[in-house]
Image 1 (cartoon, rainbow, N blue to C red):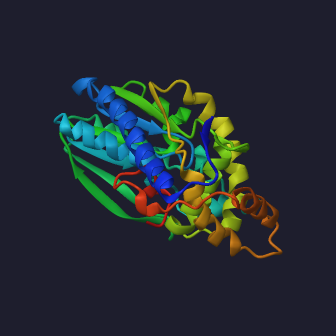
Image 2 (image 1 turned 30 degrees about the vertical axis):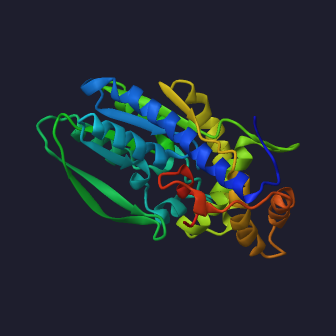
Length: 303
């Protein structure tokens, strides 16, 4: 459990943000170096973790480090293999889709991509591009590759058994990133799953055009899916890194106050919004202006 004060001076808050970003970058850099030292034998890296854990930042750091070691890196978002939303909705019996379920990914297309990567006779790999706001694939991107390239497959699905089965016979390694520790603000405790929910409320609002009411509804199926498919397989990952940031409750506060404050009083989840607002009300807001250029927190905020 990470401990932090509820009330910070501006200098204390700024120092906390800077020091925490430096520490996380150091740990992520060390992990990336460890992976890079595995050498050219590794051609595929499965980077997984539950929602709002920091996978995008980890993928960028891995890419930077591997590039410095002379490898050409391609980041493949497994989210780009989502089946179109209207198809998933048509399948759903109750009109609700668990977008974190293995059944939402076009596994045939994903399997073909993995095969193309390891097929030395083919120097072209075509990848789909998924538009979350449109809820469908919006194009194709083409990669020219050679047998010395390394591919980072990034997404919650990289820990699912059906993906593991796809890559088990190939040269690969795996990384799991997650909010591993909670935060104790002078007796007010925020558990890891609670922190990720707050991150997701903010991220989905700004990055995916989803309001808090819908995020609350989706969260229950997200958590069910995590306990069924993600966390039981997490221990099998070759490398693990925690992404809790001691400053994050204060940094999320102004965003949460705006987003949750927009919810209708008659919304069935308004009590959950009010519970969050009550819990963070005495916490000092922390400016996102102090984030480092490569901070993990750029993944979740409108900055």
